[in-house]
Every structure is written in C-alpha cells, then in structure tokens.
Amino acid sequence: MILDLDQFVRREQGFWKELESFLGKFEGRSDTRFTLEDARRFHYLFQRTSSDLAKIQTFSAEPELKRYLETLVARSYPHVHEERGRRRGSFAGWFASTFPRAFRRHYKAFWLAILTALVGSAFGTFVVLADPDSKHVLLPFSHLLGDPSERVAEEEKRAADPEERADQGGRRGTFSAYLMQNNIRVSITALALGLTYGVGTFIVMFYNGTILGAVFADYIHAGESEFLFAWLLPHGVIELPAIFIAAQAGLVLGRAMLGWGTNVPLRGRLRRVRPDLVTLILGASILLVWAGLVESFLSQHHEPVIPYSVKIAFGLVELVLLVIYLAWCGRHEKREESRG
Image (tube, rainbow, N blue to C red):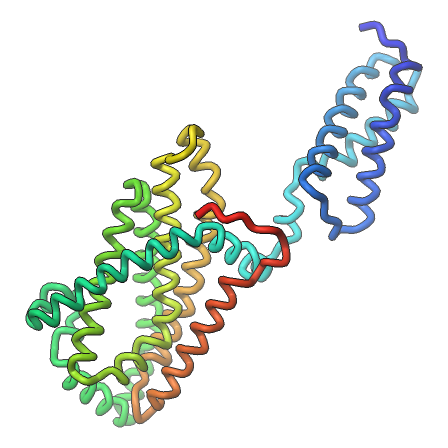
C-alpha cells in the first residue's frame, strides 16, 4: 500500500488529539460519566486510531509516530473492553439502584401477576365460604385444616408457656432456612414457567392466590382477623411482593417468548431481557431471605409474648418502606423508560 505520510498525518491528527482528550477525562476522574453519543464517538476514535496504527506498521522511519499511536491504542483498550459501571459497582449500589429500576421497567407485568393472584384469591374465598369442608382440598398445610379459633387458642397457650417457648426457640433457625428455601424455589419456578409463554406463571399465581384467599376467608369468618393480620403481615408484606416480582420476571420471559410487536428473532429477544430477569429473580430472592427471617423470629411469636398491634405496625412500616424503595430508589441515576 502506497501512503503519503505527511498527508496522512494531517488528515488523521485531529482524530488522535480528540481521542487523547477523551482519555484525559477517563484517566483524570474515575467517576466521569459520558452520554451514549460520547461512548459511540470514543469507540469510533479508538477503531480509527487502531486502523491508523496498522497502516504505518511498515514505516520504520517513523518510530516516534508509531510509539505515539501504540500508546493511544494501549491506553484506550481497557476503557473500550471493560464495563466501567459494573467494575465500580457494589452490592449496595446494585440493590439500591439496579434492582428497583429493573422492577419499574416492567411494572405492568408486576401488576398483572398481582391481578392473577387476586382472581385466584377471590375464587378461594368463594369456595371456602360456600363449602367450608373444601379447605381440606385447597389448603396444602395441615396446620390450616382445623378450626381457626382452636388454632389461635393453642398458639397463644404455647406462647404463654416458658418451656414451650424455649423448645420452639431452638428450632427457629432450621424453620427459617426451610422457609427461605421453599419460597425461593417457588419464585424460581414462577420465573422458569415463563418458558411456557407465561401460561405456567399465571397458573402458579392463581393457585397461590387461591390458597391465600381460602386462608383469609376461613380466619376472618371465624372472627380471628387480628391474629391473622398479626401472623401474616410481618413477613407477608415482603414475601408476597417478592413472589410477585418473580412472577413478573416469568411474564417478561413469556412476552419475550411470544415476541408480540417485534420482528427481532427469539435469541435476540431473550438476550435483551436476560439482564433484567437475572436482576429481578436475585432481588426477589434477597427479599425472601428477609421474609424468612421475619416469619421465623417474629411472625411465629404470638400474644402474650408480642402484642398483635406491634406485629401489625411492624408489617405496615415494612410495606411503606418497600413501596418507597421500589417506586423511588435509583430514579436520580438515569431517565427510565417503561417497557411494561
């Protein structure tokens, strides 16, 4: 290849200086942020300078120019091939920003999961009120099959017995681990069933809503509303939203499988939603760990050990904080676009 070196340098020197200016900003401050256009321009300049370096490799008479371009390319390479935000990131930053932003990007799927559970809850309520014996078919847990008032009396009697409390205390750690494992398994199932084009996720949400509706109907009808809310609110206000978030991820996956409104191939659609799916299921799992701890070490303590009003107040405070967290955290970092 014949190259007029002087003309080549005059034509390309401006691009090299511009790249050098970018590098000065990158290397001067680690917290420097660039727009998408800046990133594209930097990548273009890097590619152009790399190409220029390749062109002058045969010019042994220009060692200084060659070294200059080699230095520019070497300094640019790490900034092109690293993920700066991820390297500087931390778990706290991810949980405070990345997770709630991913949640809000797909908020419609979250509300659809809740709606499905509410329909199931209405069904469970209707069935139990119409036929109280049907709870033996609907409810999978043996401690929910008896008379609610008898169970409340038994739980409060145990709570008043110091020896019984001491015996239960030794098992709470094991019970907490079991709750976390079970709830996380349900959540992962809700996500994985998105591969059925979302049908399986809808079924899981409807079924869990049916159980919840049956329990509420049974205890409220028996006049045990205070016990019910004190029992469920402390952990339920975190556990249920976490399961809904997992179902949200399943519905996002189902929508990607269907590909409505886009001609992007399936692989491309899955690649596009994969980061948010991972973020949502990890975030849901973390919430479920907290819910498991609360259920084991607070929800299972009844009067006279802990007043029901204290447990209900604790649950309501958790709910308010969760709403604020999911609705507002991370909003200052970037403008969000809802993808439903």
